[in-house]
Amino acid sequence: MPGRAIFAVVAAAALFGTTGTARALGPDGTSVWTVGAIRIALGALTLWACSPSKQLQPALIGVNRNLVLCGAFGAALYQPAFFFGVERCGVAVGTVIALGSGPMFSGLIDLALHRRNPAMKWYAGSAVMLAGVAVLVAGGADDSSVISLSLFGVLSAMAAGLGYAVYANTTSALISRGVGSTEALASQFAIAALILGPFLIASVVSSSDVGWVWSTSGIMMLLHLGIFTAGIAYVLYGWGLRTLPASTAVSITLVEPLTAAIAAFVVLGERLSAQGWVAGVVILLGLVVLGRSQQPRESQTSPTAVS
Image (cartoon, rainbow, N blue to C red; front, side, top):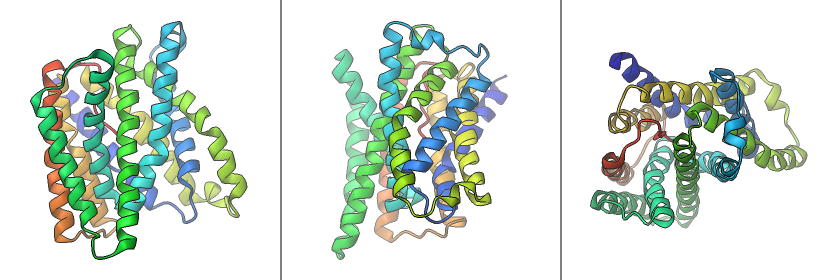
């Protein structure tokens, strides 16, 4: 039923949009490396548990193995980069930048690997999105410390967009080879957790207090981030794509930045300057144009949501 499919994608996008806020509401002293590693590991377990076949072998055979490894590095990059981005830019702006840069990097990857020149809408959307980022960074022109923090946050959020583009393109390639979307993502997330393992250990060793992991708020945060935003959300999104065209799903996933912005405003009390609002609107406009640029070569099995 299209109605149920639309509801599934809306629910998935809304869950994605709570990622930054859930991290911000977590206990003090958390490390992005610890949170990222545990989140992606729980996401992999959730996806595997929801997989109809409970088999990950098709994703780890032959050429597929190399694709999974490539996607795993992208998924591993996304975790700390996204949390650094929202930590320094704020949940609303950091999420929008990551969302906007993802399709931009996806077009660059497609151009580099397949020699497919992106549509003019891609160039227009990329230019608008980058203009919005420039406005955001320029907003700290009166305070050099703000410029430093904002620039690091912007670069981190864009790195998250790059990581997403890598594992989204890899997932699309695996699906075209007959691997189920849930299995493709579960295998990439599992290896990403292993990649982040040493950083997790280093973070724990260097921290004077890791008790937050076992606190009630810490457990609730990690369960929400891992099971809901990195597991169930992707299951719902994949289920919705079985019925909806990808172009419709791309439009629906604009619920994600909306959810992030509302949560940041209502729950976290984030406030933007007038220039910050202008930057956010410009970046979001670029995201809309970038999303539309992907519609001509849409795939009903390729994931397009980010977080």
